[in-house]
Image (cartoon, rainbow, N blue to C red; front, side, top):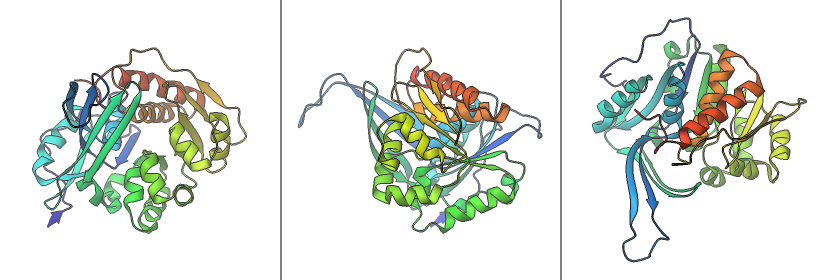
Length: 312
């Protein structure tokens, strides 16, 4: 048995004027177990490692980084029944307005993330997040939203394209933009790169990583990937492993943004932070150059903390 009823909110996020631009983020909220081995893993025995527990989920991370920049954010997600209060409070503390449904049949999703320098290897149990229904975005929440941001984790979970296409239609009718972060080359590979690209074709904003861009286009060079994807999307920002990005729109000169200076503490959530920074910039001024720079600045902040959300 499960419920789609909104969770009781333990508190309220910071009050903002109702006419401020607002972003609705729809997707995964998870528990991260971040493992940084001190040396190469030793099979069949112990390896000393730094292990940290953090709240995560690509969509929830993006919501938190948006709120950290003063953006008004509603987050829609799904957790295990016993975690509604905890995850709601964590989002409220981050400045996000949470709307969490719960499942008694599934636990909150969990990801074990093994970090090796700037590389992450993830073992993912999506748990209750896999049951998230796009209809959880009610007309009330959609009304007045400027952007609706969705991650690929939730898109590929649907067995048919009907639910996502219905979501896009509702977002368009409401006058909002649709923003997509593919989020996982592994899940996209299982879903089918061509099928995924066809499904999300036409999104206003698209945020692939370099690995995801290569998978979706079959191309290798960042500039070539952005040119190819810009034929399908309103604006494309391709994130690079260094923390930099290449972005552009069809027929326009590409923007190359170097990574902002920061000390690499943990790469987890770098792409989520970039998306948040770009979206915050786009709300202020729909400039690819300015938004990309804001994205790389936010990505640098993410790399300087352990976990995928702002430090408290």
